[in-house]
Image (cartoon, rainbow, N blue to C red):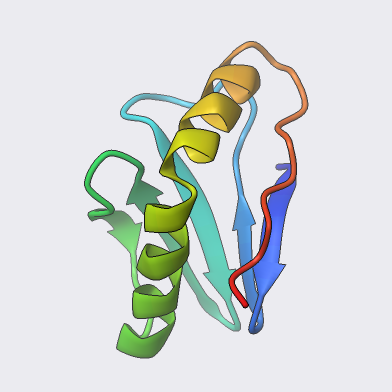
Length: 86
């Protein structure tokens, strides 16, 4: 699962050739979640509210890059790194 960003202990990644809808995976300590790209809804898992807020803030800034990476991952190509939240 290629890591595409990391900030404040949060790791963002995408699986190659993953199932729809377009989404990304988040790890934060012992917590894991899958987040939809179009509306940032939690598909699976749980993140503490503060971490989820940071992830959504980051995802809103980088939504077009996330969709581009989703396309690359669907084609079994390496997703591009995305700037972390600062």
